[in-house]
Image 1 (cartoon, one colour):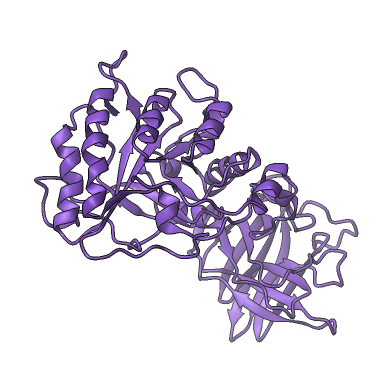
Image 2 (spheres, rainbow, N blue to C red):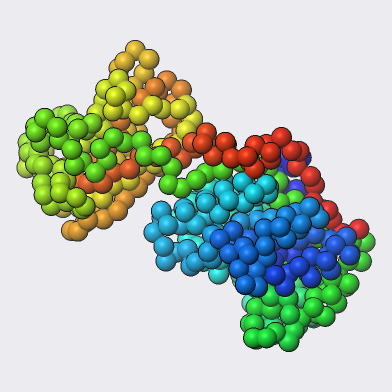
Amino acid sequence: MNTQTRALAPGQVFVSLNFDDCLASQLQAASMLQARGMRGTFFINSGKLGMSDRLTLDQVRALRDAGHEIGGHTLTHPHLTSLSPDEQRKEICNDRVALLNAGFRVTSFAYPFGDEDSTTRQIVIDCNYNSARESGGLRVPGGGSGSPYAESVPPRDAYTIRTHGSVQDTTSLDTLKAYVTNAENSGGGWVPIVFHHICGPCNPPQQYSISPANLMAFLDWLAPRVSRGTTVVVMDTVIGGSLKPPVSWPPSQLFKNPSLETDSNGDGTPDCWQRGGFGTNTFTWTRTSDAHSGSWAQQVRISSYTNGDRKLISLQDSGTCAPASTAGHRYRISAWYKSTVQVRFKAYIRDSSGAWSYWSQGPLLPAASSYTFAEWTTAGAPSTALRLSLGMSLDRVGTLTVDDFTLTDVDATTAAREGEGYRRLEHVEEVEATMSP
């Protein structure tokens, strides 16, 4: 089983043949690869399986059974950075869950359109992928010297693996060969090559396509290069690592009364929450109708300040309201807020003696004149933590209004582990991907 990223000898090249978007025309590419002892990585949009001109689930299973790698590519192939973080998590995490539950080993991800930013990258990590591939970043033949001819092994960043961009109908056979020979002649490295439609002429025309004749000619040229140290491998073979558990989105909400609507005793403080704080400061609390959703939100105003803070945090009880903590698990809190000054999230833990203590805090969040979404992911919970309390705090003169909290366990996998497909995969040893002879 792969346990770490492979290393390359000087001048050695790995070529990974990638096929995106679960297109039915890619079956002929798989047959061409298999006839030459090669295997590819097929990045699948699970939400598109069985649609017109797309692969069916049975066909993807046949690819797997033939030794090809199956990777994730989101449910529906959106521009991820145009979506909210939660929408991105649904696309990325739930695509992987669907593929795992169908019986596939899924460790590699490809960003649709190569569209990603730091938020998207972190979500891919949180969804338990081992790697992610972008579009571009490597030097094309005749291009400037600012980029390398090949990705390094191990890669510069396993979650932004570089390529030459997608093969297009204008990409010549000589250009494909140059992707490889330039890498060979510049010290070696990793050359992922991205294909989409396999047709020529395509009807209707497809910009991101290669003719079967050109693909066959390229594979025939590539196969003998194993003698000089150039081998065809799937993405997972290069990256390595264990198969991580599935992560569904949205996970279970851990806060009680997260929208702050219920106040059973009418004291102004929402059930399962408390108005906390310490230090020398003058403050007022208000149950306000200026809510993000529903009828009520909470507002705190500090009019004079020497030290300390004021905060709305989940109730620090023995477990009726306070969620249980799992050692090592990360927790993500989010809320909608507006404020006249900077604010931040804070976290507290309860130990076996029943004592509550400060644990951690998030970065300062900017002032916001209208309701703004914010979230923070904690580090792994300490082994001494049995219960959690989290919320948002104000530690200077100003006003904070907050509503609609969520708290989720980023590393919770119990429910996902019950999926039959993943249970099967847990007990199957990883099979090394077939290389070219």
